[in-house]
Length: 537
Image (cartoon, rainbow, N blue to C red; front, side):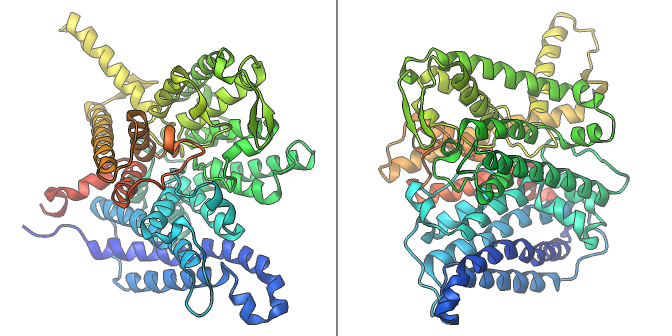
């Protein structure tokens, strides 16, 4: 028996990813420098004492040193499936750890240079939670309303940017731009890809990764421009250029972080309507967008997963809008940042808030246009159901994924049919494709593992909360577990869209960090590392 995994190659490739993490870190650094330029009038010392300049400089230096040190392990010329699993899992662990450094340095201050200030990010568990939530595009936060408002624009931009980086995948990005990851890139993409498989858009894996990221960046840019155009037209006064960029960076990755404490409730109805179709698009397989862009639009409308995803969104939106329209609790004016609104007995308001919440929670974006914890029970149950669905395979959406539910439903139908007709051979089809038993078993196994982990995590959260005297309802425990393993973000009650995860003990937050990590990598690439057969053969 001997070790069959070239761990040195995997770790060296992680070092390559870390080295290039310095590039996105330069974006918030540039904003920090721009915002601190007025301090130069008081001297260089005052400029360096600005909250963000030194923390981001220090983080860039740390990523370069750490990445270079790991790269010296000398990667092998070829990366196999085992090394791919290890490299992807480690990357999604190490990158959020380094991503939390700006939060910690800003909160604590750099000795002799910056002072820091009191914030929930002073606790290492909170900083790691926020960073992991960002990179995994979960959108769960430990920043309350007051805490968000006291942080600088540069730190909030980093919080938005890490979601955009994590949306399409940091390893997919690395394969797209780094020549050293071209060999073995197929294994890396397969280990990181959201959904049962990733569709090749070009003969070369590197070109596939590039096209995926170009689509992703192009749709993001379109949303930013449209949001800012709405602002220039006077239809969304507080959707400034900064807010347009911030929300563009967190819509397409289905992230949900917002620099506004009240999420999208802070903006006008027009801005909310603009964001809805982009959230919907983020839950669609990006390979279908590529097909449509290259003259094969029929693939989009004929795809069974897309039709099911669209049908679920339309059905749940119609049901929720009717329930909101008839909700007596929402028939009085609500005081929101965008003005007094009435949802009950208001057709446009009911439809808008229903569509916004259903799309956001179905594909795990996590934005909210109002505090849906104020809804009565039946309306909330629809949202909990939406949380379990997920986006499409090959999208940035989290959750179980629509395609898996389709296969599970077809499997149940086949079992019922063969119970009546034992001699019948009934293959499971997905469009024109016949799924082999291995694929079906994999989908069924993933779904069962997902539900088992969800229930086990909910039990741990309940017990740990009781240990520290935190009083949580069953709904709060259940939705907190769904929201983290499904990379959704908000739940109900204390973890609602206007709440935060601050109250949970550090042990629960660390568990949730693990849930977000496992959920983003879709369980198997992580759990396989815990088996003996992976390491030895």
